[in-house]
Length: 148
Image: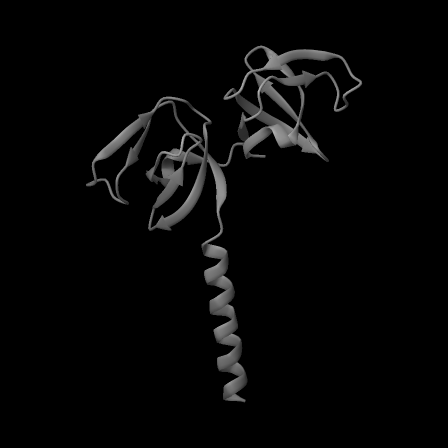
């Protein structure tokens, strides 16, 4: 009986460790966020982000800090209070088209240049409804990189 309990404890530990190392996207909560060289306020600042809702890929965690990589491959540590679960993405495809409806046959509204930040309103199937600047419409999900 004790071998079974030990076996299940071992399985639970393996599962919990695999979930904790999963990568996921978050966005920046403020217009000014410090990226640090290490996971504490004592570590020097590498750079300062000036774009609210910029999506970053979380790679690791240490207490209240998260190690991230941005769309330009900058990496470092950000305090969790400066991160948000707000959905946003960056257009990673040259000249994506924003459509009025989630279909190639609907009215095209605008061309979206590469690197443009988009707030995600909702996604369904292969399309996401976005808002960027003065434009709001649908774009193919495959053209976006970030928290969808």
